[in-house]
Image (cartoon, rainbow, N blue to C red; front, side, top):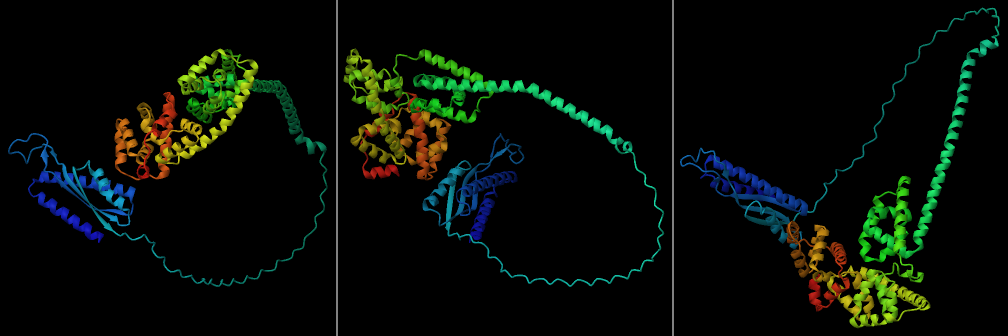
Length: 572
């Protein structure tokens, strides 16, 4: 059946080409045939490549028919010399008809989209592309039956030929042996026996003594140098250990030094971590603004080898210089009991500060990092700021400061447990669709508003993309790969998809629109992975621009919630 269809289309194609070529000159006919053959081959190759990628063995090209326009001369032609003129001819395809054979067991959606994909592929060859799909139930592939196995009978070995009998040997004649008289015994002298070995023995003894002398001299020369090298290495290790203890002695000085070092000289910070160990960065892990820099430090630790002995002195000198600079800028009036605030999550501090009086809150703010101070002041209302400034005149004594530090530390540790719950809830939000995320967070804000605020401060919702600043969204679009961005756009809602397309420009927008026009379904796992990558880049862009993640998420949650039918349509 397949061979008959192919033969019929080839016959129709040849008849149409012969009928249209009767009114042309030989030269024009050759040009039309050459352009028609080239276009037909290009169309067959393009469709065959598409089938080899999408449905190998289940889609076949039956035939391609190309209809050409009348040839046109590109240069001026003098009247009467049309047949002999040397001007070039232009022949353009008018239409292409492609007949394909599809397996009827393929999905219906895929069968309906095949003509559109072929027209998209062949649109550059001809203005009109007509696709004629034919459905056929393809047989399942089967292996050819093996021939029956017949065991071969054992081969009988031929009997060995009999060996010829050996000829009898003649008996040897017995001859009488006459005894000769014994020769006189000559005893060699000692000189004759050992004389040839005396010279080599003396040479070997001299060489042995010379080797002993050389080995002794070498040991004497190398012994002081070895001891000096061991003492220098021991001294270096003692210096590095003492420097490490000095760096770890004060958390505030250490964090100030490493924070400035990571922001100013990333390569130098990597070498310092090689020498001091990764413990010097423990408190900085809770600062969101340093997360990209710390990721670069981790990458540099893998790519950069540990400093050699020749470089170790330079690295130790730079660490000691940075440490002295941080000690000079450190405020010695800050009590040691408040050093526990180094490395504490901002959310835990803000929640624990809600139970303080204005005087106590002002005292705590003086010991916080600048970024936490700014975030805390932004959350205060106008009345709270006025009461805070009014309580500035009431200072705390030394004993009151120590008691407040102990009480505030217990509160921070208590709310730190809630921060771990926020991390777990944030990870769970990554597996929900947009409607389920909004519903979960609205319910959590009603039951546990503090925990909801902590979650929304560290994890960006999918629906918040439409409420983020356009500059941040455009920055995130440039940092995500095109395939991942297309997967996120296919699985998100139409509003988010239109917002992303409006902010993409240039060739990247054309490529994204081409990907989305194919309407290829995306799996849930691929969509969640692509959404995670895009939201992570968007959150980083918002933090770099100083935007509050909680405020952006709150804008998305303030809109009218969807009913169940609309929620299912948006998630699908």
